[in-house]
Image 1 (tube, rainbow, N blue to C red):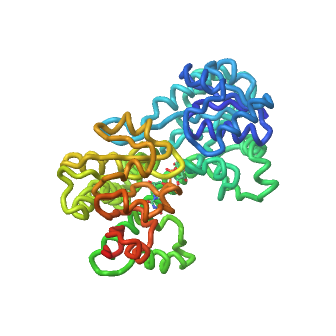
Image 2 (tube, helix red, strand yellow):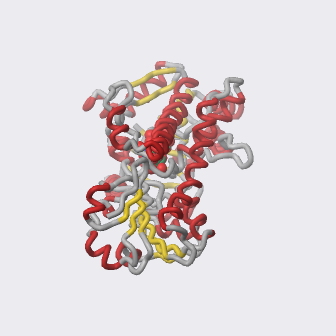
Image 3 (tube, protein in one colour):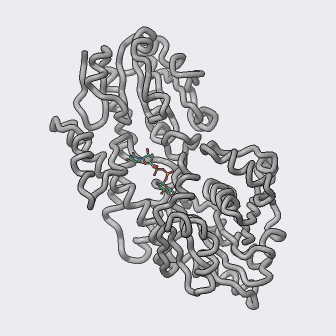
Amino acid sequence: MRVAMIGTGYVGLVSGACFSNFGHHVVCVDKDAEKIERLKKGDIPIFEPGLNRLVADNAASGRLSFSTDLTSAVPDAEAVFIAVGTPSRRGDGFADLSYVYDAASEIADSLKSYTVVITKSTVPVGTSNKVEQIIRQRQPGAEFDVASNPEFLREGSAIEDFQRPDRIVVGADTDRARNVLRALYRPLFLNDKTPFVFTSRESSELIKYASNAFLAMKITFINEMADLCEKSGADIQDVSRGIGLDGRIGSKFLNAGPGYGGSCFPKDTLALVRLAEEYGAPSRLIESVVDVNDNRKKRMAEKIISAFGGVKGKTVAVLGVTFKPNTDDMRDSPSLDIIPALQAAGAIIRAFDPEGMVEAGKMLQGVVWAKNTFEAVSKADGVVILTEWNEFRALDFTLLKSLLKRALLVDLRNIYNPRDMVEAGFEYHSVGRSSVKP
Ligand code: UGA
């Protein structure tokens, strides 16, 4: 099948590469000429494990190509995906759909024979209808259907998530469109019997927002329970395990931490709040989730300052600045709230992140970037773990202790065991558990 993927951001690039790996012929299109030039040379603009290889292999086989020219990619394609950004609109938090509508107009002008135009971008309920209207107005004779097919991949495990999804959601009104989507995902259906959820376009669009909002709510719930644990002497790790084993609740996304970040949850929860308001069905629950999470990120700096007994003139070693491990993405990372607040309180920040320092350098001022963990901690007054990269999970504490001025660890991802830390001679502060001293 011939596919055009409009937009080469996270979702577009990963989906395009994965569809070509399924055997389809995919042209990934983007207006950003520099990015397309880089991609043609095999230079991948984001850090995502396995993506380099996947792109190189499929480009070499001739199934995957890159272009700035939508008008040459669309006429031959049986399926055209819109995978452009839907950022928060300045001022009101509603999803900005201008890139989606621009893409729809351009696609309309290039349609030749029957094509399914598929919105993969995260879009509010009603957007696919609007896309259909735009195309029909611009080219009344065009033979096409519009479908919704949201993407549920996570950064850092995007390829695995695309190739082994929990479900494929398709919102479409005609059998013809549904069959094109079935054919696109055929390998998944044949190999894994991945469940397909066929719905209306409206339901499909809402499934995406509702999924992200539910997960954000789950994280926020466990974060609030962590606060209660700290005050009451309970242990959040035990509470998470104890509730997660109830099959109705499930154990995933119950890790307490500094608050959710990233390119999706903050933007999508806010957009859902606005969408619900607009439809006259406000979501008090998600409004609170947004509010609680925003405050939490700010409060984490106070937790660190109190653990250090004040940070004025002290060097704080920060390990991890990206919003999660295995990505270089800094968007809405808790570190963007925490580090400036520590600096405002007088701290000198020496930080290390395995992949995120180039991006972080553009967003954080006055940070001393270290080449590795040990350079970051050397003569520091304590260490803070902000992101749970694997390489921070097995630190050599004897060496660490010898390099630090004070054996103090604030672990906002709960990757260590308090008892082990006491044995290693560290004062240890974590989330939702009592602090311990040797
Ligand atoms: C999220 C969803 O998980 C994907 O299904 C979805 O496709 C994607 O958004 C999107 O809409 O594009 P992602 O933002 O890559 O994926 O990252 P997650 O793994 O979901 O983590 C989001 C945030 O929640 C991170 O800051 C992470 O540290 C935090 N988190 C996650 C917790 O604090 N605790 C947890 O138990 C899980």
